[in-house]
Length: 318
Image (cartoon, helix red, strand yellow):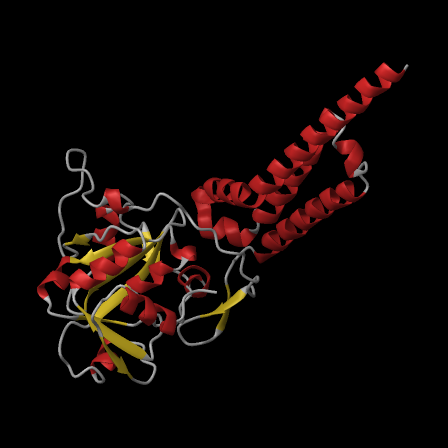
């Protein structure tokens, strides 16, 4: 479970951070929020973004600051189309906040440890700025120095940038914000498969692929491959013998990798990731298989040690 609103407010008090709080109905926009905080200025918009390598960012800016995502993407060294809005399911999985509650305070959660943060340098010009405290049925106001104090308490170095700048990026002008790209990526659980049809602008169902027959045939083939691997694993030698034979041990690992690759190479993944599919699969393999392979290797090592011990003991008793 992530931090609750009450836990966050208690933490701010423990840090001796001064803030004012404003309870109000659930609001989804800065304009709606301003109706309940007295129109005092300092309203903030918070964007939750994702790049093609599954790295996430919170961009927190004054309501009046213009954030051009194409320009920002180039300044981060991601190319023009490198940034997009993060999927809605990432909010509870990574930030652990409901829709409409994105805020720098969400970085208090361990699940958000790899999320990058860019703060509008305009915050420094405001006496107070307004943020949701992990829930959009309340707003709190505090100054930028106190926001810094909170971020430093969770091990974050506050980074204020000119979000409206549009510097040239090229061979002799490297991306000025490249240092703010997170080093870690976050892979979300695979969402349930969606229907093969979607809605057009008029709300009518349309087929999303012109070669639906080929897609269906490919899906059947992949399913058969996965089943073959499952059957092979089910009929394989007992695990205890797999850990006493190096060849069978390696075969066990290859079977697990093959099964995972077939599960990942679905048509939806191919369409979504395109040329990045190889990187996507590699990242997922590392995440889902690393611990399991370490466990397999440990079992193999311990089994080999035990067999060697018993063999040595038997030779002494002869």
